[in-house]
Length: 129
Image 1: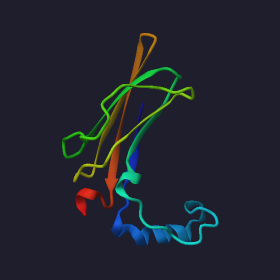
Image 2: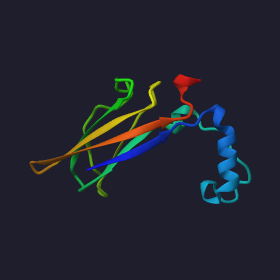
Image 3: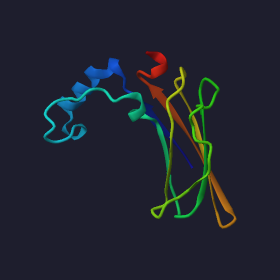
C-alpha cells in the first residue's frame, strides 16, 4: 500500500493564489462569503496525516522530511481508530526540505499492516518566510 500526498502550506506571499482560486473555482470558496479572506495563520494550516481502518485498531506513525529529520511537533504516540475507523496526527511544518515520507503501522487482534507514502511540500512555509 503506497501513495503520494501533496501538502502546501499557504503563507502571506500566496494571497494572489488564494484570490485566483476563489475567483476561478467556485467549489474552492464558501458560498455567500463574498470575497477572499486573509491567509490562514500557520497554526490553522497544519499538515495532517490521516488513515482509515477497522474501528478500535491501534496505529503508530512517523514522518521524516527530505532534509533528514522528523518534525519536533509530530505527536509520537499510538492512536486508536475511532468508531468510523479514522485516526489522524497533525503537526507544524518544520522543514526547509521539499517533501518526505510518512509511515504508518496498524495493529489489531495480533495482526499488523504497514504503509508508506511520500509527500511534497510546496510554496511558502514559516521556515521560508
